Image (tube, rainbow, N blue to C red; front, side):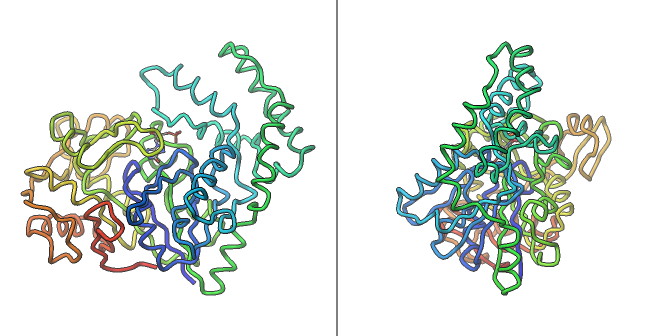
Length: 428
Ligand code: IMP
């Protein structure tokens, strides 16, 4: 009766899908608890590559049941397309996927608002994925949201749409000079997905808790990551949900009593998509080398990711915030492409050394990284399956990171294939 959370320790794209896939070999359920189709998880199975946005990565294992929890925001069109695409590739999805009836829906007006706002912000834009995530969560908190369960009751759906549109249409017409939305058009659009959604709608929290009581194992899969958390991240350059460990509990509907392991995932370097501070960002040829070697282009949007050295103060802070029990280090092989490896061990802020992670956003904008230089390593490490197989320099890098973060490694990925990993402790 254990639940394990897998979450990112930086700005997302740490390879959580990959880590979840490895841990899912021993799990009965995999559940997404936050975010929506702004996420992008890549899982490789043999020669096949699956890119998942909304469906939990456990779906690639036929014996795993997946849930989309109450904390997720669901675009029904995107979900339908993703499920159909997976089924077209031979996976059984609809009989193994449950969607919580309390989860909120992303409506077309959320996506339109997301785009308008980003344009209006100009240089101060957040760099969102333009998927309507923020406006959908806003409506949830404002109690104007449309939930997955509303799809099965046309009367209630229309009443809720009417309430939601009262202010929104005024904004569309008067602020953005757009046509207002019609309740009937939106209701018809949504009801097109009723037959598709209805069999999957469920109380996923109760379902998971029953499984846990029956000694089954649950993996909670985070979207985005700690530094994009709405409360703890680099606000306002964050997403609108809580990818951190507390969000996993709220967003999946299970209690802390079941939570045994928290696996924090970090790349061997750092990436970020979207705007906002990133103290270790590189703008030179090394950035290009790492970007190409790591295929650092967004799964959800295709955007080139910003690239930098591993930011240890940030990752250590994120590890502590989430109380991680294990660490997973991903994309170690990408650093084989560089001659020497830097790791940020502290910052200089306005002329003073600071070893923690700054609370004040202005400090973070002013933070200059202080690096420890470590030797690079020669050769291809994709064949390494045990720590001792790694070149000495790579081993020293791994040991340094593990000791600094202070949590045991459970997995080191050394290549994109499922088996290209050093698995030391299976957490679930
Ligand atoms: P939103 O979640 O689309 O509102 O975007 C808010 C911020 O989070 C932007 O900087 C996005 O680039 C970033 N973001 C959202 N989802 C992901 C993700 O899955 N990986 C990396 N960054 C993300």
